[in-house]
Image (cartoon, rainbow, N blue to C red; front, side, top):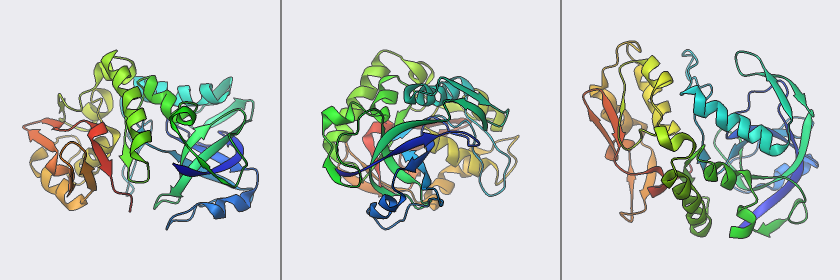
Length: 290
C-alpha cells in the first residue's frame, strides 16, 4: 500500500495528547502539501500539525462537543493508552495538569516519522506513527507492507489491548487484516481494555456518570451516546430516542461479514431498556471517510 512518508518530531508540551492523538512537526513543512486527498492538513508556521492515528480508537481522556461539558471514558484504560503512546515514543517523564494538559516533558520532543494517505474533515493528518530510522526518503511515497506496519505504534497499541480497531476506507484490506489479527490476540488474552469491554455484551447507561465510570465501549459509540444525552437530561438517560438519533447521524460504513454498506449505526446498535450494545464487533466495520 503506497503512503507518504514525512520525517519530523513529536511534541506534547502545552497540548493534551491521548492514546490516538498527538502533535507532529514536519522537518520540512512544505511536505504537508504533499498529503493526498480532498482535505488539507492544518499546520502552523513551524510546520506543527495534529495527528489522528489511523485504524485505532482509544478511550477518551476528554471529549466535548457543541459547548457541552467535557467528559471522559473510564480513566484506567484511557490513561493507560495515553501513557503507552508517550512511553513508546521515548518521553521519559510527562507532567500533566488536572485537565490533561502537558505542563512539562523530558525530553521536550522526540524524533520520528509518519505514513499517511490523507487528512480528515477536521484537518488532522490521519497517520501511522513510527520512530527510529525512517523507512525511506521523507516526502516520497513508499510501499507499506505487513512488516513495516508491525513497527508502528498503531500496531503496537492494538497488540497491547489498549485500543479498539476502527477502520476507514483509506486503509488497504491486507493491512487491516494484520491489525485485526493483533487486536484478536489481545482480545483472546483479555489484555488491556478487553477484560472490561462491554461493546458487544452491553453497557448499562443511566446517566453521563455511568458512561464515564463504568462503560468500556467503542469510543465512537460513547461519543454518540454523550451527544444524545446532552440533547435531554444527561443525569436521567432516556434511551428510547437513541436509535432515531443514530439514524439521523447517518454514519456510512461497510459490514465486512455481510459484504454490503449501510447508513446509520442504528443498524448495528441494540437498545433494550437502559442497556446499549453493538451487534457487530468493531473489526467487522469499515467506515467511509467523507
